[in-house]
Length: 330
Image (cartoon, helix red, strand yellow):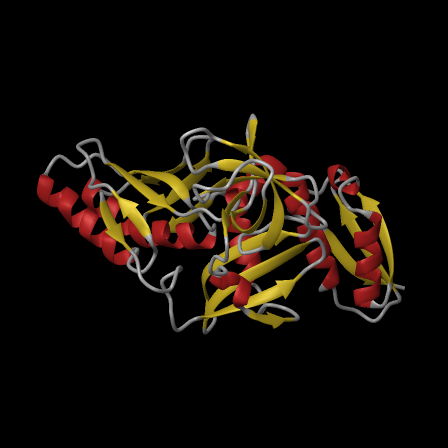
């Protein structure tokens, strides 16, 4: 495997992370001018990468440096974290200070516990951004809707991105000749990796290229597009398959849509409602009926506090999950 990387985890040292504290979630965008380069998302109450915690070592795998720690740090008391790089002299029952290195990830059919490491680990860059009240108009919406449909278009085609328990798969669709289609898709692939905060095992299914020179050209173009994004990468095989391996710090935006689409859409509805404009005293939020149960009372109370208006919630089956309606009424 080839390795690539640089000091900036996302590969854009001159750009700036902006952090928007939403209702029920915290959003981060890496922005350069009016262009989004990368995005991350954390839901309130989650144990995120970079969080310092303490707990008791309840099991240690024989002959290894791995074990399980049960946390005693509020509000995560009782949660179990998988820990690696345990000191050889540590025994079960010991109390340890950890740093979370990967948040828990829900997948179809299973749940992956959070992971941690003994001691202090560098905080992810996206957690060190500049707080803003609102992102520039349209930036988060563009990323959110692209992740919602799992696709990004490019001239002559589109990439389709889907998550499975084993890996994330990127497929390329278009009508151009195989070499031209593969090369044209690379900027969209690089964009998707950063926009959707993808990590772990990632398979890219390029069109089959018979000539070694064509495969080498795609490998080189992909390497340039991912310069500064730490990963390992195989060379393209004869069937057009390329595999990437990158560090994962938590669920990607695609993982969240795959396992908690209603939760994603409920939080998006609150964000849209918070930005509704008008002069009336009541904020009317209309959503698909499936979202009503996900809109917690404390979230609606916070929405009223932030907007300074009474909040009225209605449902309409005619609305898509991803298309709430928010308006100010008298």
